[in-house]
Length: 175
Image 1 (spheres, rainbow, N blue to C red):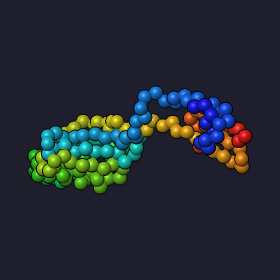
Image 2 (cartoon, rainbow, N blue to C red):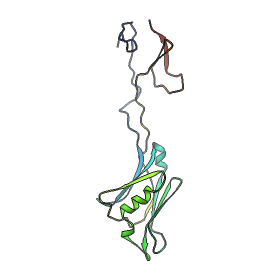
Image 3 (spheres, rainbow, N blue to C red):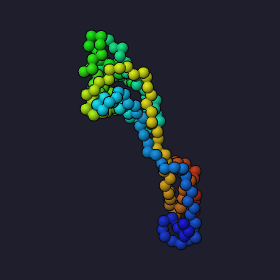
Image 4 (cartoon, helix red, strand yellow):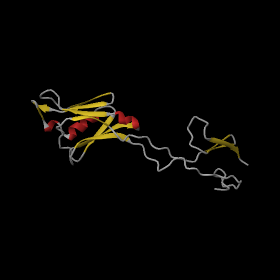
């Protein structure tokens, strides 16, 4: 755009060249997640509270090895989540393992949140091997024009810039 002068509309002969900084469309940041269970009312979706790839470090194991006559429980150690399914005597008990109850137990843990599909009335009554969360990513930076005027000196960013650094800034004066 010829004649552009730092957004002031003055024709100074300053020539501005646009250079795309990123290929493709920027992507939004996402939290890592995983689904356990199946069916319209039987899926629990668990998400890391962390936005970005660190959430991919979380894992979940659903165990059927609880003690006889136990309630379903959920615990977390670091980024490893374990759900122990509830039993009546030695058998897994569907009413102790509904998706509503599992999601509530997971929501009580620090670092994750969970929701159930549909009514959540279906049960998870089978062990699930340790599985990692997936899909966590940081947002792709978006190129935006950056102009600063400090004590009459104009600074224009012609490349992606990081705060607290001087890299990418060009210095000039208004004429």
